Amino acid sequence: MLRRRADLTEPQTYSFFLGCVMPNRFPNVEASIRLVLPKLGIELEDLEGASCCPAPGVIRSFDEPTWLAIASRNLALAEMSGHDLVTGCNGCYGTFMESLAEIRKHPERLKEVQEVFKGMGIKFEGKVGVKHIIELIDEIGVDGIKKKVTKKLDGLRVGVHYGCHLLKPSKNRPWKQTQRHTFLDELVEATGATSVKYKDKFLCCGAGGGVRGSQVAVSVDIAKEKLDNMIEAGVDCIVNVCSFCHLQFEASQVQLNKELGEQKYQIPVLYFTQLLGLAMDLNPDELGLGVHMINTQPALDKILD
Image (cartoon, rainbow, N blue to C red; front, side, top):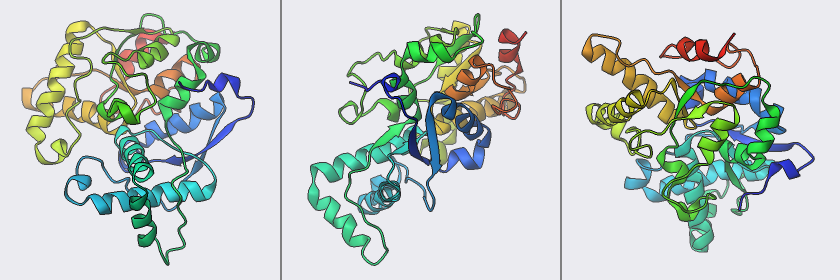
C-alpha cells in the first residue's frame, strides 16, 4: 500500500537520478520535472558522480555481475547522500528495483559488490529506497493533485502509456497486482483531461530490451501499432512517464512520416509533469513544450485560452 504524501507535513528530499536519455535528449522533460516537483513538496538533489543505470535488458543479459555492480554503485551514491533515489525513466527504475531485490534476497550478492567497491571509498548496505517520479506523485493522491490544479484541462483527450518496466515484474513493484492498472489514468484525469480507452493499451512501446538499438524497423513497427490504435481512438496527445518511451514515440513518428512522405503521425508526446504543469497554469515554454520533435501546439490549442 502506497503511503500518501498528503499525510506528510515536511518536504521530502530525494537523490535525482537522471539516467542517460533524459539529460542528453530531453532536457525539456527534465526542466518540467525540476519545475513541478518542488511545487508538490518534493525536493530534488542531484546525484553527483552517477553513471548509466545500466539498462536492464541489454547489459544484464550478457554480463549480469557487471550490471549489478554498476547499478549498486549508483544506489550507493544515493545511500551515502542520506536520501532515497528517484528516477523518471522506467528502465532505470527497473534496474534499481531489481538490483535491490537481488541483493536483499541473496546477501552473498551484496558481499560481491562490496568486494568490488573495496578501495573506492564506497560504502553500500543496500538500505536505500528507490522511487519512480510517478510513484511520488501517486502518493500525493488524486485529491491532493486536484488541489494543485488551477487550470483544468477540460476537453483534452489523452492516450496514457505506462511502459513495461514501471509495472513489471509485479513482485518487485509497489502497485497492486492487476493486469489493468488505472493509477496513471486517474492522475491524468485529476488534471481535468480525459484518459481515452484504446486498443492494446499495455503493449510495449517497442524501444526496450535493445530492440530500438539493434532492430530499428521492428521497433518502429511496434510503435506504429500503438500510434495507429491511439489515432483510431481520437487522442489529442500521448502522456508517458519514461524518457525512453518518450523518445520512442517522438522519434518513431518522425521516422514513419519520412517513410510515408507525408505528415500522418503528428501526436504530441508529453511527459506527465508537463501535463501536470499545464494544469498548474505554468508557462508552456518553461515546461519545455516548445522544443519537442513533434509539435505540441495542437494539444496546447485545445486547452489554452
